[in-house]
Image (cartoon, rainbow, N blue to C red; front, side, top):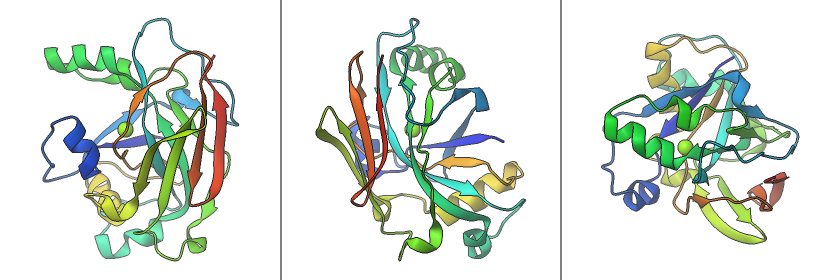
Length: 204
Ligand code: MG
């Protein structure tokens, strides 16, 4: 399976980094070895001094597809969960400065936290109006709603599948809203979709 992550998909987050709203989706991959499951602790990596959380809704692909038309994209994912795209921001800055790929900043072990629970898409009355939030040590630090995405789930699926065949079980991290920030050892993170807690883990 592959993990596809979308960058720059919430306008408020694009603004906080002074980036431009992209004309087409921006995506990158994480390896399957980056997954952190079952609320296991995130061990702070020794090679970074600025690991930051990015809470994101995650959709799960349910059928193999290539060149998927946007109007059919909805039938290619069946479940929605929540994840954290941990980013070694200091390493990412260096890569960007040098014009190098981002993998060491984005694809390291445990950098793709994923909720144990995924809820069937049918349980959401409108996938283009889903609220989610992240709590850091009991305080809400990120709040998002899919209505504020630059590119909808359907657009993302259609776009990615032009270049890469999507396969059953692939995960798409669909971008983070504003409020990203650093974590430190001892922090506790909880992520919610609507009023339901999907994730609760610690930084060690
Ligand atoms: Mg991200």
